[in-house]
Length: 229
Image 1 (cartoon, rainbow, N blue to C red):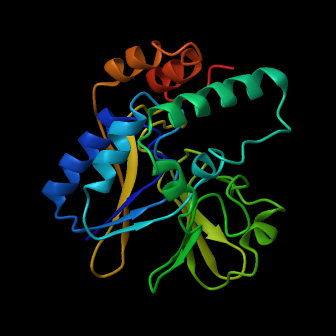
Image 2: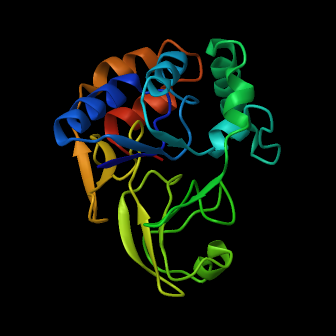
């Protein structure tokens, strides 16, 4: 069984809960879809835990790319938040980890699905829960496949253009769909993908976030499962 984990964001408490459930479910292979450490309470510990998993396929998300190529076109307040969070992550990670994360592949085409972080086109442009005019552009030529992606932290699946199915397993460490439980997915040996939600104690993660000067926004996300504004 394949375990599909996206957008963990340094939330070791959520990851540990998911791994415990995955062990009971019989997961023996992993697809890791990016955004592993940044913007979260335990970046180094989360990376260490993921590196201990066997039989894994790793993809790079924008959270990894931004460690060396941060966005420069954000509004001032948002930019300050992003740069402070990235600096905290870089300072926490062991030597050589940033280079390893940045060097990860961005796409994985497997027999059962096409995997990416945001979309086949971009790690920061992603599909919405409802069909839109941008869907075909974001597919970047991918056709007749299930496309598995993350980035938006919203768990959903729907038909896409060109005989595709669009699947977002949601975020392990920072869901934004109003449900604070860790979101992920499994794929059975027969190829069927199943959404999962795993409860964990959110409050220690939120309290840890508040130790960072920039962490209040993330703490509120964890406690509410969404942005308040």
